[in-house]
Amino acid sequence: MAKHVKPQKRGMVTALALACLVVFAGLVALRARPDLRQRVGSSITGEQAPGDSNGDVSARDILGNIFAPRANSEPASGPSTATADSDAPLADRVTMRLAERGAVVGDATLLTGNRIQVGGQVFVLWGIQIPPSNYQCITGSRQWFCGDEATRSLRDFIGIQKVGCYPKGQDLNGRTLGRCFVGYIDIGSQLVEQGWALQLPRVTNDYNMVQELAKAHRVGLWSTDFDPTAFLSSSNGG
Picture 1 (tube, rainbow, N blue to C red):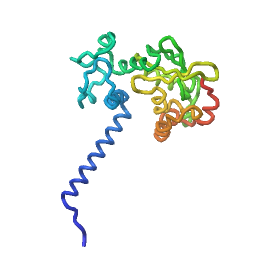
Picture 2 (cartoon, rainbow, N blue to C red):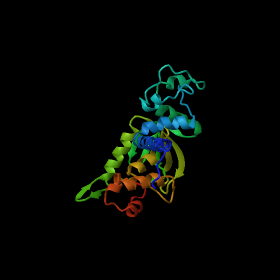
Picture 3 (cartoon, rainbow, N blue to C red):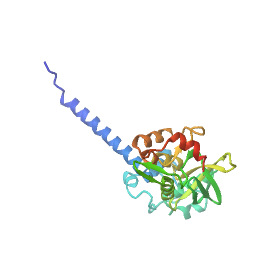
Picture 4 (cartoon, one colour):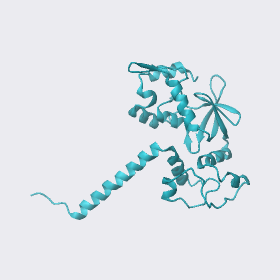
């Protein structure tokens, strides 16, 4: 004799399925929207950028124009520069606060694929390997300069935003290494997630998860016929 599912249980199963769907949609949105990650990161950590009023983060704030200056914000207590910075985009306000933790912060100039000048100091991006501009990839029968595409992706991501870099020692060539951020977003993680950089396993395992995602989705370099092992051994951090 077949068992009948009670209406109450069917309702609970339906509600649970809808909740899972909402959570999945939220994760997809976070992956596709770096700006959304900025706002959510601010909400989770509780670190309010100068000029943000405490406890005034609504769903419309997160889903709307996140980087727009907040109107009618209450001035935060602190340095006298807080008021002047209150009209800056959220990412820039978060980045400027990294200086309090020892980061070099300022306008950024991309010199090569993995070298960036911030606040007058040049950094080689720590923990990752980016193809040089003359690095060629093969996709099917097409041969193209994927190094140029990687550099373009990084330049587009940074744009005119402030960058903060934490010095991480020097590489074998005596160049200063830096772990660099735009707001809450790690530039190295962003590039690895887009498939335009590989994690240096001898340096860090921090980017394992995003690299596996990039590989699974065959984005960036993973969409080509490149050999990861040969790439890491031949590029030598250039």
